[in-house]
Image (cartoon, rainbow, N blue to C red):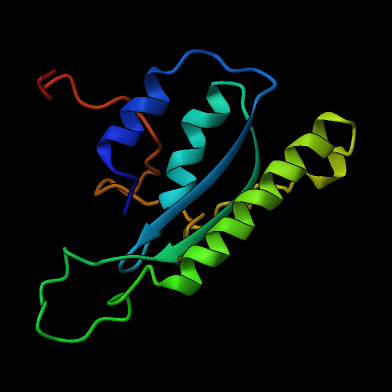
Length: 143
């Protein structure tokens, strides 16, 4: 799974943002394999520093079996929202501290591993090659 196309377009089209901080976060209903890996590629190309990331379950509208209860049903809930608020405040504090010189707060981006099924695992294309964040196809009409 990758980030939604509008987010991929946004990160591809944004200007260089050297020395700016970025936090990756998202909601997902199922298996978000590769989502953060894919998002990080354009962010890093734009010169930003990723200072944190987190994810929460959200509604799953793409599941083929809507009548079967899904682990994401009912999310985000009040607990998820409270966790997200705490996470956002912590990341704001980290950003201030990093700009003040505490660069040890910058996490190391996980090394991609094709054998894992997590947010930082790049996906393989049908050719077996890694796929990375890229501009949307030129065939998508601009509205």
